[in-house]
Image (cartoon, rainbow, N blue to C red):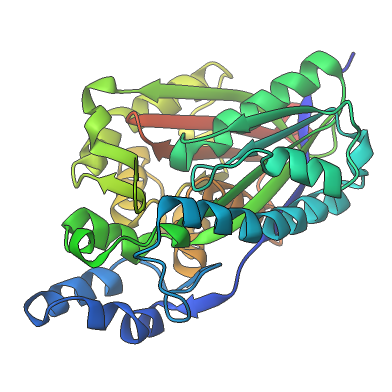
Length: 353
């Protein structure tokens, strides 16, 4: 049995995009008191986001006073076609059909229902009735990497293709006016967006082999990043101390991951870093000693798509795969509640012989 799990296809799907400045002028500017408006506007302008997507745009439909139940019902309406589009593109990219999949894994922390996306999409896309399904919820922005590790482990163990879908609709969790005045909510509303991204993993060579998925969780800082279920949607908690926690851990995690494969940072020619925000990217660049060119794909993802939670690091991976000269060795990094850091090493067969 082949002991490699290889990324054979990637597919993305995006709701309509809006320019950050237009989102500010068209909605948020009139929802903050005059004495705070200039400060909040600067946060939006300095977010590193130029455009972002919303399945439910506040300029067209204000959900801030919706109950959580109403938001969850809308989640199913919007997430199913978005997920179907991403999965279809990934299968096409990989050159396989849905009924060949042995495992279908879904990561999402922005909506819950049963039957969920895993069941509905397996049905609608013609997956086998015997396909195994896995749903990963509430892991947040780093969920794509443990999800990728799970499907890769399945591929190695069973010798069959698997697919991971990450789908998030953060736009459904716009907070009511009173909560929105909190600085953590201001930052969240300036950064987050919607997207879906899917990855097909198959046995054999021909793409990026998943070498290892590694993690570090600092539970002493568990309150630094939260995602709380309230009666009015899910509320983000985002401490300004998060970059300091990353600074304390990211270099050691990356060095340890690479050392287990006889590598160093200098041996990596592709970096897919979850763009949680400009400060997150700055800390990673500084701690790993990366130049601007190495960080450009991740910064471009932030600028073009915003922080889409779990799909975002897969958007960065897709950007690297589409370069005129794609990298041969990629490290993917993502961060989220816990406070948790995840890293994944991908390599083409070219660099491993």
